[in-house]
Image (cartoon, rainbow, N blue to C red; front, side):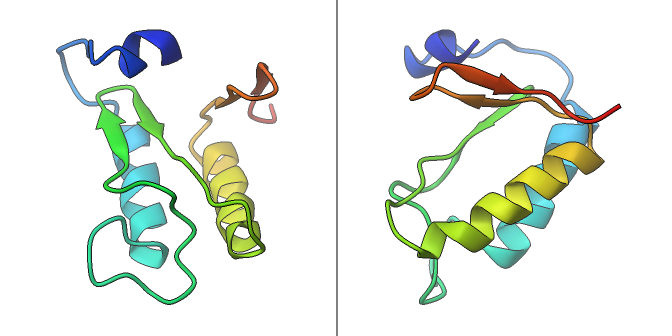
Length: 95
């Protein structure tokens, strides 16, 4: 899925409501469009959002700590998988 999205190929269909809610709550704290808060964690904006994913490129600084915490908590709340392409690891939601 990640490789498909990077190539610009997105599937069409109904939005996954869990992804929509995840994205809305995340951007309420860390907007991906101006005006950005001083502590925004994004390396590139806007975030890449599809019907079944949100791709986030985080900065390599302590600004990302709060965003990572929120991403992890929201993913668990909405039962979403986090894919770390650098580590090639999937982080599954708790049962």
